[in-house]
Image 1: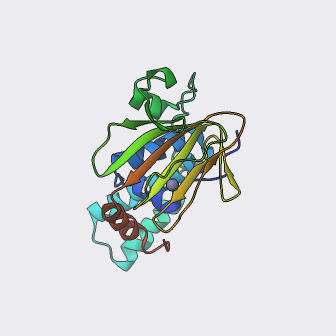
Image 2: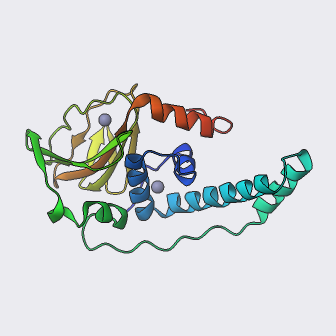
Image 3: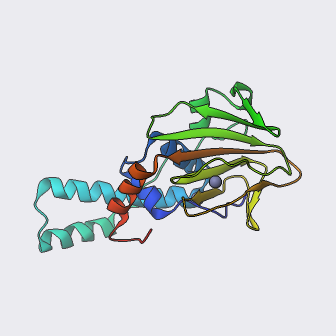
Length: 214
Ligand code: ZN
Ligand code: ZN
């Protein structure tokens, strides 16, 4: 499995800081369990966040203290995380825990054109659902007024000639109008999370402002 589309640094930072709505945390945890690259980046954010918080606790952050904190961060070993368990089915462990099993445990609801969805129980600030899209079928209009994360679990879809396969993440916001189409061959199953726009947009810029433009 080659993952080509990853989580952004702001999302990993927000996850590391425990700031994401539950639905987004589920998508991030599921991708990270499949993706060595994002797991390593998350490890760095966890280490930096922990070191900075420790330092702030001890002393006020003068210039010398800041330099000392940064020097210590440089010297930190890369945080390691337990290797993910290899799941028997298509759901990585964080998702399987959530659903209470693999595909057979999902209670699908038909939404037309052969497409099915299953809404997962999460906090109300964002929602998560599984989508089942028959091969060759366009993803129905799923309303994106805020941010949307889509993680492919089985099959693949194409969006504007870009291919997303198992493990890939598509990050979309309200400015993106798109019509993803499940590719021929295998039915596509995705985990998607969408938010109530104002809340989520408030969190990311605050966290990521010094480092990233979003
Ligand atoms: Zn990744
Ligand atoms: Zn979308």
